[in-house]
Length: 425
Image (tube, rainbow, N blue to C red):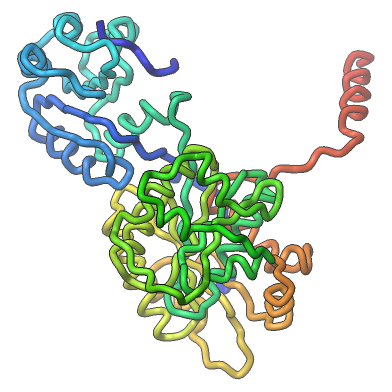
């Protein structure tokens, strides 16, 4: 029998996440076979298979609906997930009963139906259906259905990956990445890891005042897939909630990588870390493009000049086209208002990009210079500085989390007094 597995101006813009930004965890390496009754649904499933969150899943599409699935599995083993489109002239419940006789116990079933279906949802659940999606479906509906089978189970915990990259060299993308990660860990109370991907010239170790012996170079050089225990040994602890996977920042060798060189590292850290911030160097190669496209959220950092505007627009357009089912990549402006430097106004920059920056960080050489030389974050130098608030707002926008307030030692006493007052009332 099919086993049921699911549990039943220059101002920056508003940082409140919308419902459309709801996070969808990537699916693990699973096989999915869809049996469609219409060309429209088959086309939709094929489009969904190109989504980055289904990059590890092997998806095949067949026509014929439930009847074709029953015939197919009489001669072939069942995959991890079967998707079935209902047909108006077929009894889906009877079809599921027959499918159960040729289906492995661990297979999960997703039914794509329509508003005219007469089969009660309770009867579908009783027959082991893991999810029911009412048509007409869009690619994102298919992505959410498949990924939801695993993100809601305890066997796969998937962390969120945020990639930060500069539109041009020297725009301060690393500084932004490190300060946003600090806010995520300290103010949003999410365990986080910063991964410095600039192996030759990375500055994360300096910014966090760390000098680790091991780092990402050790993980890359491993002949086998790194496990969780191995990755934990490579992490350098910055705070209780923030760790660093540092770059060696040496020129002893040339760091050339294949497109999937970092996949195993990201996958392993996703299993244990709620938030991973990638400090991506300004270069356009197979692996940097893959890291950006594969991230859950992207932040491009730019300065307000012509070259940055051109590069930022090109990067945002390419990344948006490669991720049609994700929310668009975001960008921020850095070092705004530098003395005696001609600049493009924030409003004009946003008009050319066709979207607003999530922040316009003002130029403050003393503040940022002090933090860099001391190995500190901006919040450590000045907790009340307006840039500190900007980094917090960016952290909220990128993660969709609100600030976690620290409980006072008086909280238990106040709760008791409030309870007593309610009883008297």
